[in-house]
Length: 91
Image (cartoon, rainbow, N blue to C red; front, side, top):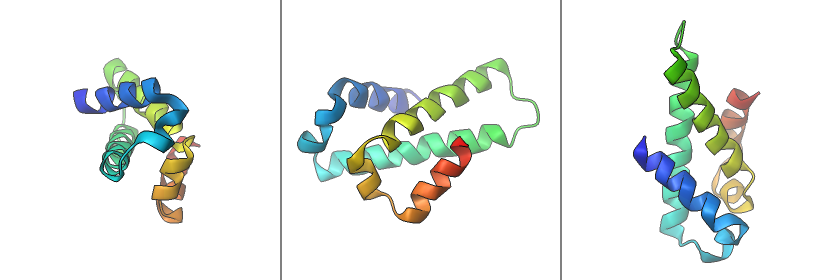
């Protein structure tokens, strides 16, 4: 979880300039973090009655997904199926 929060903070601080400055490896790491967040949201959605802490964790991960899907370079990395998969849990 700390890794995900660090990556979120990193990309928020970089802002829209990330497209020009991130290496392929950094972009791939961001994609991995995106799917880590996706998996957290899916797991919490599967719980019958999540705790307040789990609800907060889900909110942080949904926020991460929304931020990353707003980046053109991230959309270029995702297949259409992957993008649809993520957008489905955001609706």
